[in-house]
Image (cartoon, rainbow, N blue to C red; front, side, top):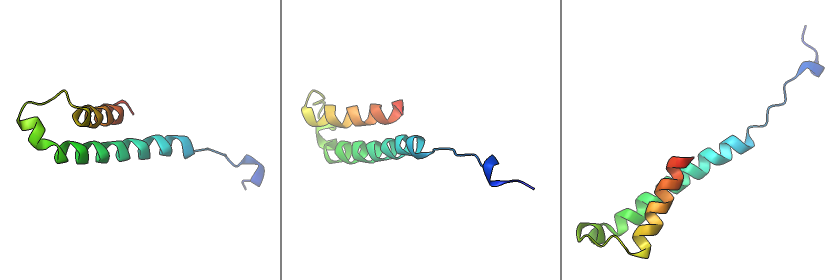
Length: 63
């Protein structure tokens, strides 16, 4: 019989926080890039809105 003292205490809050942040960053990046899709089709890449969307997209990929 397994006693209560042999219980494993695994903390999963940090890995789940990284996964949730990655999903939220991906959603935000897709929304920002979709809203500014007209700027992307006109080859206007060096605008703060586009940079912000790309930063969120690459942060999501890093996590």
